[in-house]
Image (cartoon, rainbow, N blue to C red):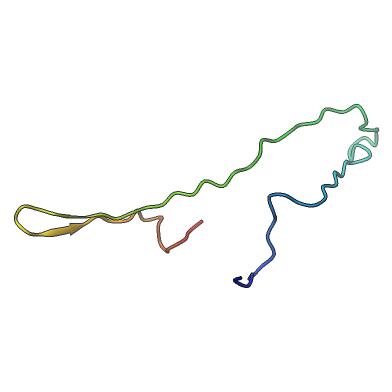
Length: 76
């Protein structure tokens, strides 16, 4: 098993605890009946770039260029 280099969130935690603010920070009024905004699940989208090589009928092989944003084997 490879050693982890940092702590990371897990997709299926053993326990989930919700923390709600008790009162409005501006007015001090209670928030028991306040609106709740649910955010959609954030999902990481991974794109792999493959630079192909193509050989012409003349025998010359040409390799495609990677986009400027692909500066390392793994990039954010």
